[in-house]
Length: 547
Ligand code: ABC
Ligand code: CA
Image 1: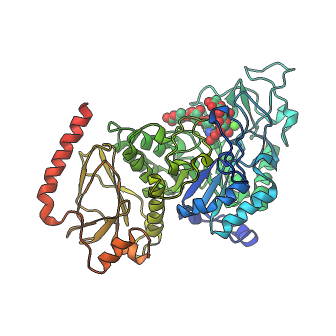
Image 2: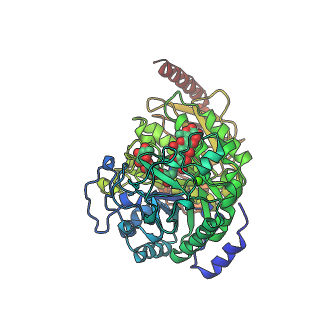
């Protein structure tokens, strides 16, 4: 990771105790919240029809009251949707409940609370040792059409006087909608949105605009003691705008570059601390969509990221869902696929990011359906009733234990793909002390994995932290394990759980330490029968693919 900027060091001295560096963020896991949809101030549960695209009533104050819910799952950072005032009233695409249509960067969005409410949120988070990441939009501003003037290049004229501080048409690039995503000048200087709702593209080539934005972000970070920024639409502004912006902010930055190719995304890792790992996202969702998904492409893409990103794949945030994409759970009814895909961000080099509602099994598809009100779930937090919440809690705990496990350097060890060749429906990812064994064969399958070296030591008791099954590596570190119903496995040495005093699978770990363990797994004498099962699995797999 980058060494901290001088300005970062200075802000650490002046701001609260939390001025966080990229290295600090690397140890975290982030929970992403659309504020309007997360929690109401009084804890009430008003109806919220996503298709209406209206404000539903969530607030920063409501979020404060639900921090236990987030923290109890093991998250130690929260990314909130944009905070500044947005275009008022109804547009062709509804109200600005998501926050991405700024109209006044010098005031907060009153729908979400007051400046004091936001400060209280930060104080509450910091009181728990948690970080706040704020989503910021710099690329565009939004105003309603000015119906008295003619349109230009198909872009309707806007009432710029409603925008602060960029209140005239000359503050913006000449109107044109982005037509050609292969033309980077188009991407940077034409406009997002459409004829129903243009997103007026700020002239970020103009030095006055640049100065205003740098001053603004520095002030915003200081005023609210923000720990990190998610930078919206980063690919829509020239790359050399960003280093100055990041240094004015003085905190960790993660950029949204919505693009599937690492060739395209890599240069942005040179100008900002990190990027949201969209290339992995596309490979991940494609790989686990069904048994015909291509899992080796996940390995290919991540390997490319590890080679081409500054800081390797460490300079990313890894995610399965967000507010712009259909929830993965909306694309399959097979829970084993969801469970497998959910593991990847946690064995990834980057920072795991989980979109609110995944834990409750929400299944909203495209925008706006993927922005459900969480209160409609009643915030059920009993792991016995919510298997995905249970799994996320386990993954957070395992990653935390791995990060500080003595004798390992989890955060410096790039993830490795160790699948034996020819086993396309499975993928094995090693990042000691963790080993993830994943499959897209589905809930009817039984999978047997055999690896010549699990990377977890020789003759070592290991635990699958997802179901507390015990296994043992062989004399040269090899491992043979079996899992039913197409479920994922995340293996970790029992000694690490014990040394970290982890609550994960505590009964099993304690018994093992007392010499009472009985390996559920693959003692050497059972190898023969495992080979037979592996054969059976291959047959099952094939017949499933033929159906
Ligand atoms: C509204 C309605 C939608 C309606 C839409 C036309 O208008 O709500 O129902 O369909 C905000 C709101 C949205 C709203 C938009 C527009 O504003 O949240 O609800 O949609 O008014 C960020 C935010 C996003 C936000 C904005 C705008 C930007 O995360 O929430 O949206 O501030 C582009 C941008 C990206 C942006 C995204 C929505 O649009 O680059 O920053 N997200 C290609 C392009 C991408 C492009 C994408 C979608 O199409 O390369 O740049 O994203 O248009 C891969 C390729 C990619 C390709 C994808 C689709 O396939 O590799 O290149 O992406 O394989
Ligand atoms: Ca732009």
